[in-house]
Image (cartoon, one colour):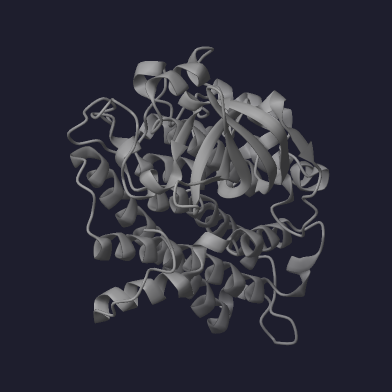
Length: 398
Protein backbone atom coordinates (compact mmCIF):
# COMPACT_ATOMS: atom_id res chain seq x y z
CA UNK A 1 0.00 0.00 0.00
CA UNK A 2 1.40 3.40 -0.99
CA UNK A 3 1.88 5.93 1.77
CA UNK A 4 0.23 9.15 0.61
CA UNK A 5 0.94 11.58 3.42
CA UNK A 6 4.48 10.84 4.59
CA UNK A 7 6.47 13.95 3.64
CA UNK A 8 9.76 12.33 4.65
CA UNK A 9 9.58 9.44 2.21
CA UNK A 10 6.91 9.92 -0.47
CA UNK A 11 6.43 7.23 -3.07
CA UNK A 12 4.42 6.97 -6.24
CA UNK A 13 0.74 7.39 -5.43
CA UNK A 14 -0.48 4.03 -6.72
CA UNK A 15 -4.11 5.06 -6.37
CA UNK A 16 -3.74 8.03 -8.73
CA UNK A 17 -1.86 5.85 -11.22
CA UNK A 18 -4.63 3.23 -11.06
CA UNK A 19 -7.27 5.90 -11.68
CA UNK A 20 -5.35 7.07 -14.73
CA UNK A 21 -5.02 3.52 -16.02
CA UNK A 22 -8.78 3.04 -15.79
CA UNK A 23 -9.32 5.99 -18.13
CA UNK A 24 -7.09 4.68 -20.93
CA UNK A 25 -9.84 2.82 -22.88
CA UNK A 26 -12.10 5.89 -22.91
CA UNK A 27 -9.26 8.19 -23.93
CA UNK A 28 -8.22 5.81 -26.71
CA UNK A 29 -11.81 5.73 -27.97
CA UNK A 30 -11.90 9.53 -28.07
CA UNK A 31 -8.36 10.07 -29.38
CA UNK A 32 -9.28 10.34 -33.06
CA UNK A 33 -12.04 12.78 -32.16
CA UNK A 34 -9.64 14.98 -30.19
CA UNK A 35 -7.27 14.96 -33.16
CA UNK A 36 -10.06 15.80 -35.60
CA UNK A 37 -11.72 18.53 -33.52
CA UNK A 38 -8.39 20.02 -32.34
CA UNK A 39 -9.54 20.07 -28.73
CA UNK A 40 -9.97 17.69 -25.81
CA UNK A 41 -13.53 16.35 -25.64
CA UNK A 42 -15.39 17.68 -22.62
CA UNK A 43 -16.04 14.08 -21.61
CA UNK A 44 -12.31 13.54 -21.14
CA UNK A 45 -11.98 16.57 -18.87
CA UNK A 46 -15.00 15.48 -16.85
CA UNK A 47 -13.46 12.06 -16.31
CA UNK A 48 -10.12 13.60 -15.30
CA UNK A 49 -11.93 15.81 -12.81
CA UNK A 50 -14.04 12.96 -11.41
CA UNK A 51 -10.88 10.85 -11.00
CA UNK A 52 -9.28 13.63 -8.97
CA UNK A 53 -6.46 14.07 -11.48
CA UNK A 54 -6.99 17.79 -12.11
CA UNK A 55 -6.14 18.42 -8.45
CA UNK A 56 -2.98 16.31 -8.62
CA UNK A 57 -0.61 19.27 -8.04
CA UNK A 58 -2.96 21.37 -5.89
CA UNK A 59 -1.65 21.76 -2.31
CA UNK A 60 -3.07 19.24 0.12
CA UNK A 61 -4.27 22.00 2.46
CA UNK A 62 -6.43 23.26 -0.45
CA UNK A 63 -7.96 19.84 -1.08
CA UNK A 64 -5.44 18.56 -3.60
CA UNK A 65 -3.04 15.64 -3.72
CA UNK A 66 0.23 17.62 -3.69
CA UNK A 67 1.69 14.76 -5.69
CA UNK A 68 5.36 14.04 -6.25
CA UNK A 69 6.80 14.58 -9.70
CA UNK A 70 7.44 10.87 -9.97
CA UNK A 71 3.72 10.30 -9.44
CA UNK A 72 2.70 13.01 -11.89
CA UNK A 73 4.94 11.73 -14.68
CA UNK A 74 3.70 8.18 -14.15
CA UNK A 75 0.05 9.30 -14.21
CA UNK A 76 0.56 11.36 -17.36
CA UNK A 77 2.39 8.53 -19.12
CA UNK A 78 -0.49 6.16 -18.35
CA UNK A 79 -3.01 8.59 -19.85
CA UNK A 80 -0.83 9.05 -22.94
CA UNK A 81 -1.26 5.37 -23.78
CA UNK A 82 -4.84 6.32 -24.61
CA UNK A 83 -4.58 9.92 -25.81
CA UNK A 84 -1.39 11.92 -25.85
CA UNK A 85 -3.19 15.24 -26.27
CA UNK A 86 -5.28 14.66 -23.16
CA UNK A 87 -2.20 13.66 -21.19
CA UNK A 88 -0.37 16.78 -22.39
CA UNK A 89 -3.22 19.07 -21.39
CA UNK A 90 -3.41 17.47 -17.95
CA UNK A 91 0.36 17.83 -17.53
CA UNK A 92 0.26 21.52 -18.43
CA UNK A 93 -2.88 22.41 -16.46
CA UNK A 94 -1.54 20.72 -13.34
CA UNK A 95 1.77 22.40 -14.10
CA UNK A 96 -0.12 25.67 -13.80
CA UNK A 97 -1.43 24.61 -10.40
CA UNK A 98 2.13 23.74 -9.38
CA UNK A 99 3.31 27.22 -10.36
CA UNK A 100 0.50 28.87 -8.38
CA UNK A 101 1.68 26.81 -5.40
CA UNK A 102 4.90 28.85 -5.54
CA UNK A 103 3.04 32.17 -5.33
CA UNK A 104 1.89 34.02 -2.22
CA UNK A 105 -0.99 32.79 -0.08
CA UNK A 106 -3.50 35.37 -1.34
CA UNK A 107 -2.94 34.39 -4.97
CA UNK A 108 -3.43 30.75 -4.04
CA UNK A 109 -6.63 31.60 -2.19
CA UNK A 110 -7.94 33.45 -5.24
CA UNK A 111 -7.44 30.34 -7.36
CA UNK A 112 -8.58 27.60 -5.02
CA UNK A 113 -11.32 29.32 -3.02
CA UNK A 114 -13.84 27.65 -5.35
CA UNK A 115 -12.32 24.18 -5.08
CA UNK A 116 -9.16 22.16 -5.75
CA UNK A 117 -10.05 21.28 -9.35
CA UNK A 118 -9.62 24.85 -10.60
CA UNK A 119 -7.51 24.76 -13.75
CA UNK A 120 -4.63 27.08 -14.66
CA UNK A 121 -3.20 27.29 -18.19
CA UNK A 122 0.42 28.30 -18.65
CA UNK A 123 2.05 30.89 -20.92
CA UNK A 124 5.01 31.83 -18.75
CA UNK A 125 7.54 33.02 -21.39
CA UNK A 126 7.49 36.85 -21.12
CA UNK A 127 5.85 37.55 -24.47
CA UNK A 128 3.72 40.42 -23.16
CA UNK A 129 4.38 43.79 -21.56
CA UNK A 130 3.48 45.11 -18.12
CA UNK A 131 3.31 48.63 -16.78
CA UNK A 132 2.87 49.71 -13.18
CA UNK A 133 -0.55 51.11 -12.25
CA UNK A 134 -2.19 51.83 -8.94
CA UNK A 135 -2.35 48.57 -6.99
CA UNK A 136 -0.72 46.39 -9.59
CA UNK A 137 0.09 46.14 -13.28
CA UNK A 138 -1.56 46.59 -16.65
CA UNK A 139 -0.72 43.69 -18.94
CA UNK A 140 -1.02 43.42 -22.72
CA UNK A 141 0.31 41.03 -25.32
CA UNK A 142 -0.04 37.81 -27.26
CA UNK A 143 1.04 34.41 -25.94
CA UNK A 144 1.08 31.54 -28.46
CA UNK A 145 1.03 27.82 -27.74
CA UNK A 146 -1.09 27.94 -24.57
CA UNK A 147 -2.13 24.29 -24.23
CA UNK A 148 -5.57 23.53 -22.84
CA UNK A 149 -6.46 27.19 -22.37
CA UNK A 150 -10.03 26.54 -23.52
CA UNK A 151 -10.47 24.32 -20.48
CA UNK A 152 -8.83 26.68 -17.99
CA UNK A 153 -10.23 28.95 -15.30
CA UNK A 154 -7.07 31.04 -14.97
CA UNK A 155 -4.02 31.78 -17.12
CA UNK A 156 -0.42 32.46 -16.10
CA UNK A 157 1.01 35.08 -18.45
CA UNK A 158 4.65 36.13 -18.59
CA UNK A 159 5.36 39.80 -19.22
CA UNK A 160 8.28 42.20 -19.43
CA UNK A 161 8.33 45.01 -16.88
CA UNK A 162 10.87 47.79 -17.25
CA UNK A 163 13.24 47.54 -14.31
CA UNK A 164 14.83 50.44 -12.41
CA UNK A 165 17.94 50.13 -14.58
CA UNK A 166 15.91 50.30 -17.76
CA UNK A 167 16.34 46.58 -18.43
CA UNK A 168 13.29 44.33 -18.79
CA UNK A 169 12.39 42.49 -15.60
CA UNK A 170 10.22 39.47 -16.44
CA UNK A 171 7.24 38.77 -14.20
CA UNK A 172 4.46 36.19 -14.28
CA UNK A 173 0.90 37.40 -13.83
CA UNK A 174 -2.15 35.39 -12.82
CA UNK A 175 -5.24 36.37 -14.82
CA UNK A 176 -8.83 35.03 -14.83
CA UNK A 177 -9.49 33.22 -18.10
CA UNK A 178 -12.56 35.37 -18.83
CA UNK A 179 -10.39 38.51 -18.98
CA UNK A 180 -8.42 37.37 -22.04
CA UNK A 181 -9.29 36.39 -25.60
CA UNK A 182 -8.29 33.22 -27.43
CA UNK A 183 -7.25 33.19 -31.08
CA UNK A 184 -7.61 29.94 -33.00
CA UNK A 185 -4.04 29.52 -34.24
CA UNK A 186 -3.23 25.87 -33.46
CA UNK A 187 -3.25 24.29 -36.93
CA UNK A 188 -0.51 21.66 -36.85
CA UNK A 189 0.12 18.06 -37.88
CA UNK A 190 0.45 16.54 -34.41
CA UNK A 191 -0.80 17.05 -30.86
CA UNK A 192 -3.79 18.69 -32.50
CA UNK A 193 -6.08 17.92 -29.58
CA UNK A 194 -4.10 20.08 -27.16
CA UNK A 195 -5.76 23.22 -28.49
CA UNK A 196 -2.54 25.15 -27.92
CA UNK A 197 -3.98 28.42 -29.18
CA UNK A 198 -2.90 32.02 -28.69
CA UNK A 199 -3.92 34.07 -25.65
CA UNK A 200 -4.49 37.80 -26.19
CA UNK A 201 -4.66 40.35 -23.37
CA UNK A 202 -5.38 44.03 -23.90
CA UNK A 203 -4.82 46.28 -20.92
CA UNK A 204 -5.77 43.71 -18.29
CA UNK A 205 -5.25 45.00 -14.74
CA UNK A 206 -3.58 42.49 -12.42
CA UNK A 207 -3.31 43.17 -8.66
CA UNK A 208 0.20 43.03 -7.24
CA UNK A 209 -0.49 39.92 -5.17
CA UNK A 210 -1.17 37.97 -8.36
CA UNK A 211 2.33 38.50 -9.73
CA UNK A 212 5.72 36.96 -9.09
CA UNK A 213 9.22 37.65 -10.38
CA UNK A 214 10.16 35.07 -13.01
CA UNK A 215 13.85 35.65 -12.35
CA UNK A 216 13.38 35.04 -8.65
CA UNK A 217 11.52 31.77 -9.23
CA UNK A 218 14.17 30.60 -11.70
CA UNK A 219 16.76 31.31 -9.00
CA UNK A 220 14.84 29.23 -6.47
CA UNK A 221 13.15 32.04 -4.53
CA UNK A 222 9.41 31.40 -4.22
CA UNK A 223 6.73 33.41 -2.42
CA UNK A 224 4.78 30.62 -0.78
CA UNK A 225 5.03 30.73 3.03
CA UNK A 226 4.41 26.98 3.29
CA UNK A 227 7.95 25.65 3.46
CA UNK A 228 6.96 22.02 4.11
CA UNK A 229 5.14 21.58 0.79
CA UNK A 230 7.79 19.77 -1.22
CA UNK A 231 6.64 20.10 -4.86
CA UNK A 232 6.71 23.89 -4.79
CA UNK A 233 10.40 23.95 -3.91
CA UNK A 234 11.52 21.99 -6.98
CA UNK A 235 13.55 24.10 -9.48
CA UNK A 236 11.27 25.76 -12.02
CA UNK A 237 13.12 24.73 -15.18
CA UNK A 238 13.21 21.07 -14.17
CA UNK A 239 9.58 20.95 -13.07
CA UNK A 240 8.38 22.60 -16.27
CA UNK A 241 10.50 20.33 -18.49
CA UNK A 242 9.28 17.23 -16.67
CA UNK A 243 5.73 18.02 -17.83
CA UNK A 244 6.79 17.08 -21.36
CA UNK A 245 8.18 13.65 -20.48
CA UNK A 246 5.07 11.69 -19.52
CA UNK A 247 3.33 12.05 -22.89
CA UNK A 248 6.39 10.70 -24.72
CA UNK A 249 6.76 7.73 -22.41
CA UNK A 250 3.11 6.80 -22.83
CA UNK A 251 3.17 7.26 -26.59
CA UNK A 252 6.17 4.96 -26.89
CA UNK A 253 4.51 2.26 -24.77
CA UNK A 254 1.34 2.52 -26.86
CA UNK A 255 3.32 2.17 -30.10
CA UNK A 256 5.21 -0.85 -28.78
CA UNK A 257 1.96 -2.54 -27.69
CA UNK A 258 0.36 -1.98 -31.10
CA UNK A 259 3.35 -3.33 -33.03
CA UNK A 260 3.63 -6.41 -30.82
CA UNK A 261 -0.12 -7.08 -31.02
CA UNK A 262 -0.02 -6.93 -34.83
CA UNK A 263 3.20 -8.87 -35.33
CA UNK A 264 1.62 -12.33 -35.25
CA UNK A 265 -0.98 -11.32 -37.86
CA UNK A 266 1.30 -9.53 -40.30
CA UNK A 267 3.98 -10.76 -42.61
CA UNK A 268 7.12 -8.99 -43.74
CA UNK A 269 6.43 -7.58 -47.19
CA UNK A 270 8.61 -8.77 -50.08
CA UNK A 271 10.00 -11.66 -48.00
CA UNK A 272 9.01 -15.26 -47.27
CA UNK A 273 8.14 -14.42 -43.66
CA UNK A 274 4.40 -14.90 -43.20
CA UNK A 275 4.52 -13.53 -39.66
CA UNK A 276 6.64 -10.70 -38.34
CA UNK A 277 7.22 -12.65 -35.16
CA UNK A 278 9.41 -15.07 -37.14
CA UNK A 279 11.68 -12.43 -38.68
CA UNK A 280 14.99 -11.77 -36.86
CA UNK A 281 15.03 -8.19 -38.15
CA UNK A 282 11.68 -7.54 -36.50
CA UNK A 283 12.74 -9.30 -33.32
CA UNK A 284 15.84 -7.13 -33.05
CA UNK A 285 13.97 -3.92 -33.89
CA UNK A 286 11.29 -4.59 -31.29
CA UNK A 287 13.90 -5.44 -28.67
CA UNK A 288 15.80 -2.24 -29.42
CA UNK A 289 12.65 -0.18 -29.17
CA UNK A 290 11.67 -1.81 -25.89
CA UNK A 291 15.14 -1.19 -24.49
CA UNK A 292 15.03 2.44 -25.58
CA UNK A 293 11.68 2.87 -23.85
CA UNK A 294 13.04 1.27 -20.68
CA UNK A 295 16.04 3.59 -20.87
CA UNK A 296 13.80 6.61 -21.35
CA UNK A 297 11.66 5.69 -18.37
CA UNK A 298 14.68 5.05 -16.16
CA UNK A 299 16.26 8.39 -17.10
CA UNK A 300 13.07 10.35 -16.52
CA UNK A 301 12.01 8.70 -13.28
CA UNK A 302 15.44 8.85 -11.67
CA UNK A 303 15.52 12.56 -12.49
CA UNK A 304 12.04 12.91 -10.98
CA UNK A 305 13.17 11.16 -7.81
CA UNK A 306 16.09 13.58 -7.51
CA UNK A 307 13.73 16.52 -8.06
CA UNK A 308 11.37 15.23 -5.39
CA UNK A 309 14.28 14.81 -3.00
CA UNK A 310 15.32 18.42 -3.61
CA UNK A 311 11.79 19.57 -2.87
CA UNK A 312 11.58 17.55 0.34
CA UNK A 313 14.91 18.80 1.68
CA UNK A 314 14.46 22.32 0.26
CA UNK A 315 18.13 22.20 -0.73
CA UNK A 316 18.60 23.63 -4.20
CA UNK A 317 20.75 21.21 -6.23
CA UNK A 318 24.11 22.47 -7.46
CA UNK A 319 24.21 23.80 -11.02
CA UNK A 320 26.00 20.69 -12.29
CA UNK A 321 23.35 18.48 -10.71
CA UNK A 322 20.55 20.55 -12.22
CA UNK A 323 22.20 20.25 -15.63
CA UNK A 324 22.51 16.49 -15.19
CA UNK A 325 18.82 16.16 -14.31
CA UNK A 326 17.88 18.39 -17.23
CA UNK A 327 19.91 16.19 -19.58
CA UNK A 328 18.25 13.04 -18.23
CA UNK A 329 14.81 14.49 -18.96
CA UNK A 330 15.61 15.65 -22.49
CA UNK A 331 17.47 12.43 -23.26
CA UNK A 332 14.47 10.44 -22.03
CA UNK A 333 12.17 12.33 -24.40
CA UNK A 334 14.55 11.68 -27.30
CA UNK A 335 14.93 7.97 -26.49
CA UNK A 336 11.15 7.51 -26.46
CA UNK A 337 10.77 9.41 -29.73
CA UNK A 338 13.50 7.35 -31.39
CA UNK A 339 11.83 4.14 -30.22
CA UNK A 340 8.63 5.21 -31.96
CA UNK A 341 10.53 5.98 -35.15
CA UNK A 342 12.03 2.50 -35.10
CA UNK A 343 8.64 0.90 -34.49
CA UNK A 344 7.14 2.78 -37.44
CA UNK A 345 9.80 1.19 -39.64
CA UNK A 346 8.80 -2.24 -38.36
CA UNK A 347 5.12 -1.53 -38.98
CA UNK A 348 5.75 -0.43 -42.54
CA UNK A 349 3.82 1.89 -44.83
CA UNK A 350 0.44 0.68 -43.57
CA UNK A 351 1.23 2.37 -40.25
CA UNK A 352 0.79 5.72 -42.00
CA UNK A 353 -2.79 5.01 -43.05
CA UNK A 354 -5.19 7.52 -41.53
CA UNK A 355 -7.20 4.72 -39.94
CA UNK A 356 -4.13 3.33 -38.16
CA UNK A 357 -3.60 4.80 -34.67
CA UNK A 358 0.16 4.37 -35.10
CA UNK A 359 0.30 7.34 -37.46
CA UNK A 360 -1.33 9.57 -34.86
CA UNK A 361 1.12 8.34 -32.22
CA UNK A 362 4.00 9.13 -34.58
CA UNK A 363 2.66 12.60 -35.41
CA UNK A 364 2.03 13.42 -31.77
CA UNK A 365 5.49 12.23 -30.75
CA UNK A 366 7.26 14.26 -33.41
CA UNK A 367 5.45 17.48 -32.52
CA UNK A 368 5.70 16.99 -28.76
CA UNK A 369 9.42 16.20 -28.87
CA UNK A 370 10.04 19.35 -30.91
CA UNK A 371 9.13 21.63 -27.99
CA UNK A 372 11.82 24.27 -27.56
CA UNK A 373 12.72 23.38 -23.97
CA UNK A 374 13.23 19.67 -24.67
CA UNK A 375 16.10 20.01 -27.16
CA UNK A 376 18.59 17.33 -26.06
CA UNK A 377 21.48 18.96 -27.92
CA UNK A 378 21.13 22.24 -26.00
CA UNK A 379 20.78 20.35 -22.74
CA UNK A 380 23.89 18.29 -23.48
CA UNK A 381 25.80 21.42 -24.47
CA UNK A 382 25.12 22.99 -21.07
CA UNK A 383 25.94 19.79 -19.20
CA UNK A 384 29.13 19.30 -21.21
CA UNK A 385 30.29 22.84 -20.54
CA UNK A 386 29.89 22.35 -16.83
CA UNK A 387 31.62 18.96 -16.87
CA UNK A 388 34.56 20.50 -18.73
CA UNK A 389 34.72 23.57 -16.54
CA UNK A 390 34.01 25.98 -19.39
CA UNK A 391 33.25 29.34 -17.80
CA UNK A 392 30.58 30.72 -20.11
CA UNK A 393 27.07 32.07 -19.51
CA UNK A 394 24.34 29.45 -19.49
CA UNK A 395 22.28 29.41 -22.68
CA UNK A 396 19.19 28.20 -20.79
CA UNK A 397 17.93 29.05 -17.30
CA UNK A 398 18.75 26.33 -14.80
